[in-house]
Length: 275
Image (cartoon, rainbow, N blue to C red; front, side, top):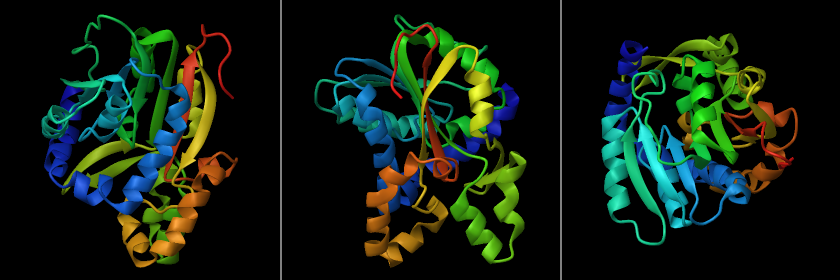
């Protein structure tokens, strides 16, 4: 798996330089990331230990630290980690960010020995789609999360209404690519293997060890990043859609039709939980 993961690391190294300008720094990207953050707030508290898997350029890690969390930001892309570390140097406040090189497809080769378990493990915007063996990842998460902790995973789902409508209206079968569940994506001119997981697949993989407490669509009413130009052309329309995103994202089946899906799970040993 380690050799298979290298093309992905190289692709994201190449994409790192303009990732913020093409996604995180755009209006659409800010709306989507804020949708995730609002869903995370009920599970956060100052001083908690957080693991950010597939941290990219560190936007989530910095936000968590600014809210008082101590974050380990992990990624398989050295270039992404360098940008995240540079951002963390300017961080002020009670939180802290450290970075770690970690390959989610070769955890058996680089299993870090944490001094303590994490209260929150986050993976945002598609790192999970580069994972080839979900069950191996679940096993590691079980070892890394506190009994009363929360795992929040945002991944690209099997069906995106925006994407399907856009491509099929143009007579382009690319709109069907997710339906197969496995394909190649082009990142910074390089092709990488990706998996488009269904919510059912995620639930089955996590089922033995974790309990699902919430499923939310992220980008139900807002377009995927490659269509953010539509947001720039019609800012008032999409501002209205963004305001309704939180309401729509929790409704079935809309929550399964978004560009991304956020699933929140807790260890089965945990008593109670959020619905």
